[in-house]
Image (cartoon, helix red, strand yellow):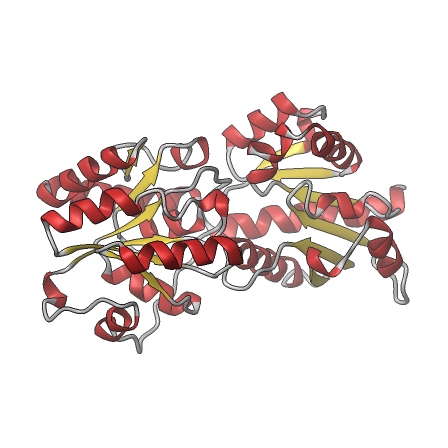
Length: 349
């Protein structure tokens, strides 16, 4: 079967990594899966024209109900959609977008939510037969670069100190866009750093939004203890995560944060903002810590620093959680089974 797969493909983002992994699952079952960026298309008619080319596509898949899903409304092929997170958590608040997303969901053969909570939310805010929505958590696989110099990483991020081994590095992994709220902790962390110079925050991720990137760069220039690192390959990012004290998530909205799950897999403590997408994964005090304000972030960080048993517990339980709930093998089986339904739909009409 020849499939078109649409997603937002900004390099080195969670969306890109997820899309590539799902594409490989589909192709390992013998299908052809062409992954394309939604930015390549201006309208649904552009996609309709593409899928009719010779040899024609026989089905389609999209990540994000609005950004990618709307582009499939003019095609006469069976397709499935995968919720991105911001579509259900944010875009439904816009009535025009919500109407379009309902049309997509009604026409789709299936939809995939990363969490039960996201499925319930989708069923609440959108008209759709609930039997159409499947829950499949993201599969997580980490690989650490062998040749990675922590001292060089810190130096290139602007950290100037001879006490590298004594530093307590908090790593905020996110693409620089508004919904990720990368500056949420900047002010309070800078104040905390002034009390203890060994505590530092490094923000790392692709510069997705140019205006926000300029803001972040300006804040980092004047804030002490807060740094901005150049984005790295996934293997080097995983190496940096493994060396840091804790991985931080301060997003306003998340579908399912791959960075949180990767940190757990790497046995690194997680501090995450208490939003539905994060709370669906992080159980406070069990496999990570949640915070609802910048001040609470500092409080939870101090707990993590002073309580060795707490740190050991969240690390141990985080690793176990990923192994039990985020199997790449199970994810692969789910997508291969769902694509088979598209294959059969070609012949049933």
